[in-house]
Picture 1 (tube, rainbow, N blue to C red):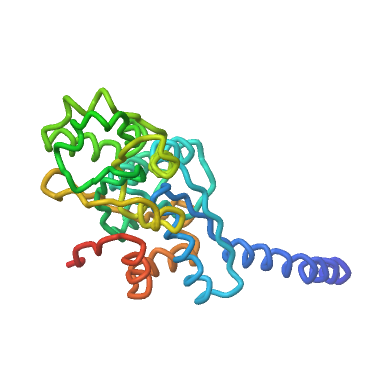
Picture 2: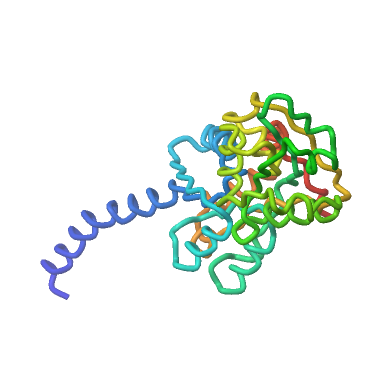
Length: 263
């Protein structure tokens, strides 16, 4: 190869290679998260702590109902980590090749709360509350779009109040919509995840009780890498961070129960 051509190639690499490396570094410093509504408020606090440990990184969070996130991911939505409120969604998306199934980690347990912002309503009344003539509307997430909608429906059935409660149900898009409904007093009572009740926008509003765990199966919140995220060192570090002691403490403050220890 003539000398002048070799010099030209060397000069070209000198100009282009730093740009290529900069582009790779920039991609590795960016983290895109897809999160269900009930964990999105906690994610904001978690992300602040994670960024303190990884200065210079950038995190974006897109939040939507579980079914909506599943549709977006199936349509090749760009993200690195999925924060879900069950194990079924990451398992299904792993089968379709959208997620790295081996990366799924349970990061918290979500309990079911009965919450009201209506003056004079006592959520501690238990079963008789659902039959009370002053309870006209009961808000839950739509079981077709939210795992907590399924959990709430099953809880009503096991409590033995499904027949009287069903005509009063308002099935809303997701847990965030239920929280907004109760905050605005659009429904008398609502069934929704404890982490939603403890979110900064709602934690000082109204009163709530936790339903007995025996009448429902608590939700298992999970973190899973996408196929793209499995090759992103920052995304891998984030999933591991969610299992660390500082993250567990933040999740506990946000209303999540600790998951069972991993054998």
